[in-house]
Length: 167
Image (cartoon, rainbow, N blue to C red; front, side, top):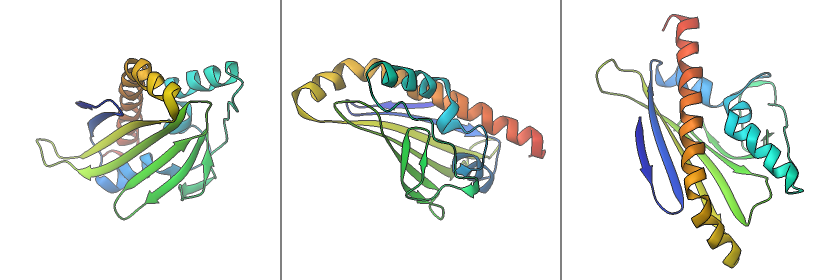
């Protein structure tokens, strides 16, 4: 797993045994049912925290089509951008926080041994006001755990897809 971090952004990259098109179908899936961007454990936990903080605690279902599109609302996310040609997805959280939380996901071909695809994730927090800046510092370790767990979850989902499709 590739790891990167700054004060504002936590990044992970995982190599999966799917072609970029197949991996993108998993990352940007808008199909009804379980989806990584809604059901990964850190997001379920965040919904609970949001409920306790008197936030919206949303769990909106996927739209029921092959891929997400800008303007969709899924889980507690708004789909800000879904560029299917570039295989880039940007989600913005609708949660109670002193700033803006974004999740970006992208898929590129992996040229290393074994081929496959590199799925990159980045969670960014853009603070609002003094409380937001303090929150960003306090939240950094938790954000690192969240992006690690989500990357592992997404890796498992992709590997299961590879087994199902014989990739």
